[in-house]
Amino acid sequence: MTNQDQPFGEVVEVYTQDALLQLQRITINRQNKPLFTVNVTLSMLEDGRPVFESKKEMRLEEHGLSTLCQALMGLKHQSVIKGNHNKGKYAEAMFININPNETVNIILTSSNHERQGLEKSYSVTFYPDFRYKLLALAVSQLTLNSKGYSQTISETLSLLKAAAFPAYRR
Image 1: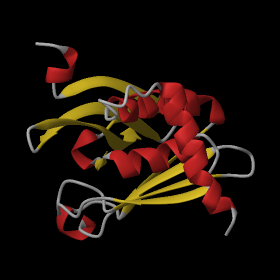
Image 2: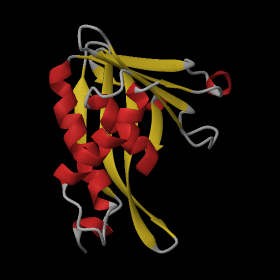
Image 3: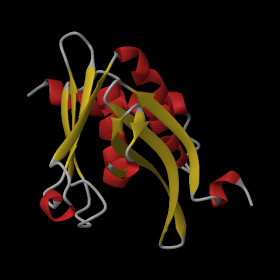
């Protein structure tokens, strides 16, 4: 069994005083082809430990991954990623803000929080030095989806930059 055959892979974590943000490589099969995605998990901390029972998650496929990468690269200072509306498990939206002091704020929110007894949204704010390790995992996972194109991580980053330029013209 190769690494690509395993559904769960590498995890990158960012701890703050209040929360834990995790990005985890996930491989799913869509029409008998592997699709390389990233699962984003945000869990609040209680006594320094994550409370996974009340976590919020979002699975990012290609479009969401590219938006996350562009935000972490600083190309988009305010981004919204809409999640799948699988009620109960996944967040409905992720907001990514790059603040004037270069800190990053990520908010996961859902509307089914009342039934689950959870907060409507969780947020985490972290310093820019954590952006690189999150970006490295996200862009490398996005690059894996370019099978058949022999696309490198560098080429993927260039495409993400080129795709962000129309946003500046608005």
